[in-house]
Image (cartoon, rainbow, N blue to C red; front, side, top):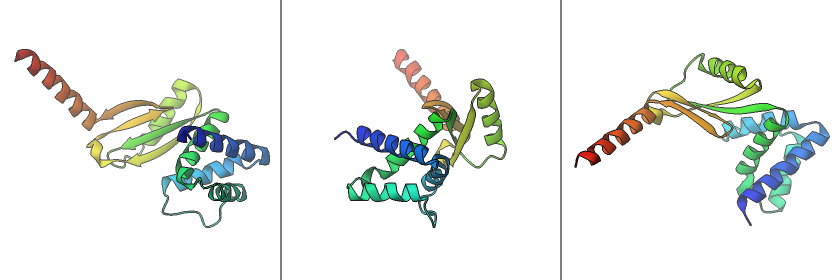
Length: 158
């Protein structure tokens, strides 16, 4: 079976179930916490989330758990009219999250949920991903562009 179909089907089912029970916001917040730091699981899961995880275990779908939960967060955010934004920086940068949030909210007219991540491989700068579209303002990306231009120009000469 297609893993994308399984992921979306279970995520949609969880979203509908939690919306029906009025726990979708709490479940989403707990899921986001779990996805951010999987080594530090909450001591007490939301009952609806716990029930859902038991269902996945009984159906042998635990391999899909992380993808299902990520898909659930995306579906929840979309259902309440928010934008999901990932901010990846080379090092912790105080105040950048607020400036990015303000800029995106002004441009889109929607509230924003930002997930931050540190990736030293960027060397410097940051990346912003909004609904699958990425803006890359990292030093690493600039070096890759420079390298590509250098190769293209040298191939023409030879």
